[in-house]
Amino acid sequence: MKKIENEDDRLITFSKRRAGIYKKASELVTLCGAEVGIIVYSPAGKCYSFSHPSMDAITDRFVNGNPQLSDSANTHPLVEAHRRIRIRELNEKHNDLVSQLDAEKERGKMLKQMSQPNRVQGWWELPIDELSLEELEKIDSSAEEFQNNLLNHIKGVTVANNEASCSSFPAMLNPNQPTNPFHGQDYGH
Image (cartoon, rainbow, N blue to C red):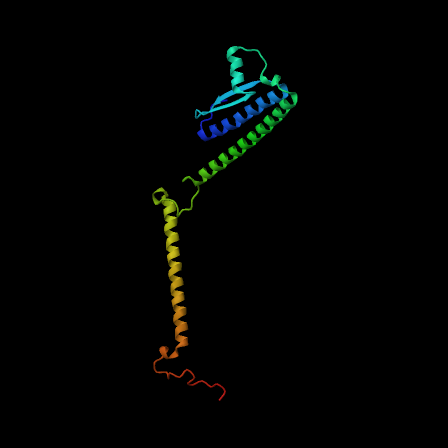
C-alpha cells in the first residue's frame, strides 16, 4: 500500500474508508454492546468522530481509567433496545448519505475531466499553432474544396435563376420580339 497521489481520489477514498470504520464500530456496539470512540482527521484537517454511548463518556473512562459501566447499564432494557435500533437506523442513513456523496463527487470529477481542455476536440476547435504541418495541409485542401463547392453552387443557383428569369420574361431575352407573350403561338385558333 502507498499514499494516493491524486488529491480528489485521496479525499474520496478517505470518505469511503471513514464510512467503513463507522459501520464496523456500529456493528461492535450493536452486536457486542461495546463502548466505542473514534476520532479521525481528514487530509484537509477536518475532524470526524463516532462514539457510543457518547464521546464524553468514552474519554472520561479512558482518561480517568474509570472501569464503571456506562449509563446504558442503568437504563431500562426497552429504552436501551430502542436507542440501539435508532442508532443502527441513523448509522445506515449516514452510510447511505456518504455513499450518495461519494457518487456525486465521482460524477463531479468526471464532469470536470470532460470540461478540461485536453478532451478530444474537432480540428476546428484546436488552436492553429498546435496543429502539425500535415493537419494544416488537410485543413487547407478542405478549405479550398469547400470554397470551390460553394462557388459552383453559387454559379449554379445564379444560372438557374437567370434561366428562370429569362423564361418568365421572353422580351428581356430578345428585345426584337413583340411584348405579347402569346404572339406567334397557336392556342387552338
